[in-house]
Image (cartoon, rainbow, N blue to C red):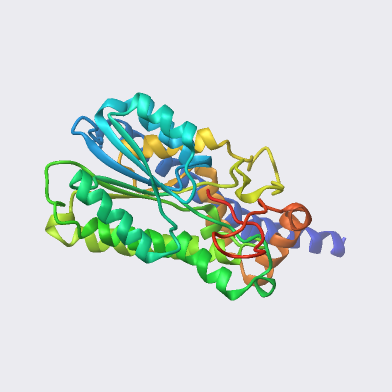
Amino acid sequence: MILLLQKIIEDYFLLKYIVCPLGLLLALILTYFLAKFFITEIYFSFFKKRLNFRNGLVIVLTGGSNGIGLELSYLLANNHGKDITLLILDVQENREQINILNSKCSKAEFISCDLSQQKQIEQAFQEIIDKYNCVDILINNAAVALIEYFDAMTIQSFFKAQQINLLSYMKLTHLFLNQKNFANKKDKCILFMGSVAGFQVGLKTSEYASSKFGLVMFNETLRSELKMQEKYKEVKLTIINPYQVDTELFKGFKTFFKQLFPTLNAKKVAQTVYSSLIQRRNIVFINWHYEVFIFFVSNLPAWLKDLAGLITLKDTLNTLAGKQQKFPGQAAQKSLQSQ
């Protein structure tokens, strides 16, 4: 009898002081994210000023020759072709793409640029300014991934990947904000292609994840700074944070809980980028529950994060390969691919 009474007291204590408070906390957190999602959707869908493409906007898209950038270029051309000039910055031209874009756009052009080289970025941007007077929308999309453990890659490759994934974004943004003909009546937007990898630990992605993490903070800091300066108050910053996308950047990636975290289609991601650009959004996750997941994971203790990573990414360790591609002018470098 005494043991039964003791068990009842212990069960009551567990239910009242542990299970119920944790359940209530979880319900409050989920309610908050759901409310935030619906309020955000209503605001940006019905009340937020939209981007006006009817002013002949000049759009620069980096890494636009394949993957998400390729799909986005077609979306822009199909919906606003006659009102825009679309300029693709990449290392390798997609001739078929440029022909299609030129059939739909008032002007489309490929500009060869190695985004790991600041001199080339400066020259390409100056060429654009000389020819088109100004840039109205800057879409920083290009990225590479070295699918390898940090100690196994060369430090030169690591630095070069950072140049493309993060520093080229910063360089182009700096050039964009300091162009001479910046102050005009046209809308101005800067879009960054971020990633859930900027919030979540991955495997063999030290240079990719660290660059995306840096991009998140750069976006946050820059947005605050621009709001404090009168001439930049109308500049809109947007960062898109997709999960695994079905491009060859992370070929062989295995998704844990496929129903909850499916591999995203590049066309769907491009559509989200396009709609977020139109609606002038701020921070965008492809699905709202990804943000909830990141919230919980980022607040776990280190040992629990490691355990979660071991469980969810164990298979990925053996299958993740990326695309076997070399940096321009560099020998025997593994797994590099534009986003």
